[in-house]
Length: 424
Image (cartoon, rainbow, N blue to C red; front, side, top):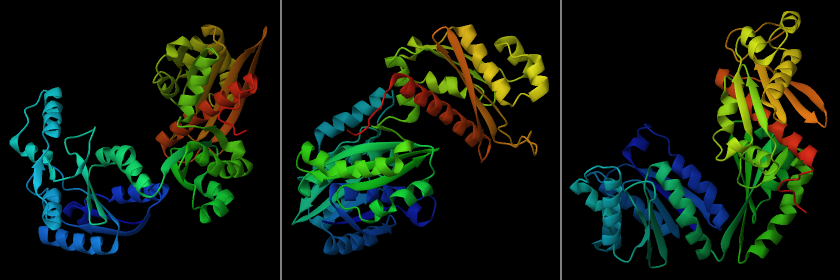
């Protein structure tokens, strides 16, 4: 199945915005069994849009068109596609009511030009837009398929995922089934080097990597007729991924490092408290984003100054004098201090130099110590780990927080013999 992506918008040609929609769609279509052969971009000009539609329909089975579905005069995609296919634009009363309801929910008056967004080429399949006022549509015409989607990625992506990909996968002879392999502690280039042979020879299932602030997600997708067939297709690939990258895989599932760590804390009733210096409360903030976390989150202390470390956490003044605030000794005393004050099961601490100033040859910017204190029967165990992160201040803070969750997760799995998401 040959697919083409046609992006409509003069702002794309002028370089005012990047065509990230084409990139996203191109990543997703192979998972549905369709190949992307062509990308085109055209401005908001009726004649040139018609010319590109003619070219695309002559050489491709499926043409996905993004942009030009808004309420203004230069949003002409539906009108031009209708004219190109010789179809009338027909009012969809259900969609009109939903658009009117959207404006009412915002306590705003809908202007008349928004009505045009409820008109579609006759006999279209409507693709509803849960995040905006511009629904899309699918038009089947003489063996060709035209799919119209809005330009804003926040609207286009959910519509692509929820409606278009399932439609195309069925058209290609099956349904798509996906698993998410989550990794932490390895860079993108190193990850690719380990599995390049799998990437270069992928067909069905496919591998699509996504990188986000230190975490890597591999989306493994199979095109199959049944869930069991998909499992059978994916298992050899997942086994090979565990063989090559198993030490970095923390789960198979659609949860990030923070979410799965907090979930396991709650499921195992492990109470935790935090003591932060260089992250300034970021870790506690991340934890409290999780619903229901009050069940196990005891307290979060931000002890930025030496005085706060002494007064709030019981860090010894002599430890600060002898080793400095950024040291394994201080990290361990901070972790033990918050453990004692909160009566939690785990105390986690961070102290470091986030920059851009404050670094020295012995203690450079990016140096961070993470402390972990926990109860082991009647005893309390305390450990620390040293890190040196590269990058600007916010990146150092984010990487510190991620490594905190990684340390907690490994502790939980080790202590409770949990192998979350592991293939049998």
